[in-house]
Length: 122
Image 1: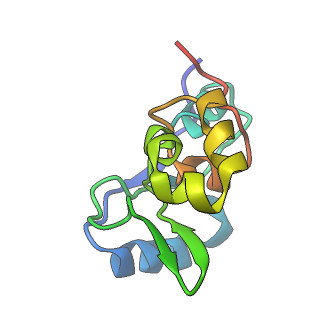
Image 2: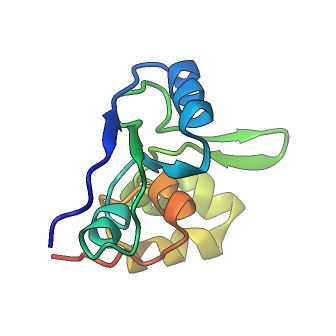
């Protein structure tokens, strides 16, 4: 099945993506990895009026420590989380759980669709 029609937005800067999300409000979904959102759309379980694709925004793939907290960007891939010494040192459980998800999936994908593991594994 094909997804319903939607507007596709491809921002190049984070501020632009935020403006697009504010414009479409709750009718928009963020596309980061697409491992969860695309299958939901194909099955028509998700019918957003707009997709805001953040894959081309630079600097969202970070894994860092800030003020004693672990910070993971929306485009950080699960394989990078799994292999990160910082994650392993600060949150070993998160590091050990990463292999149970698709390696090319992103943390943003999981957070924005609230579905882990992804539906569409090939």
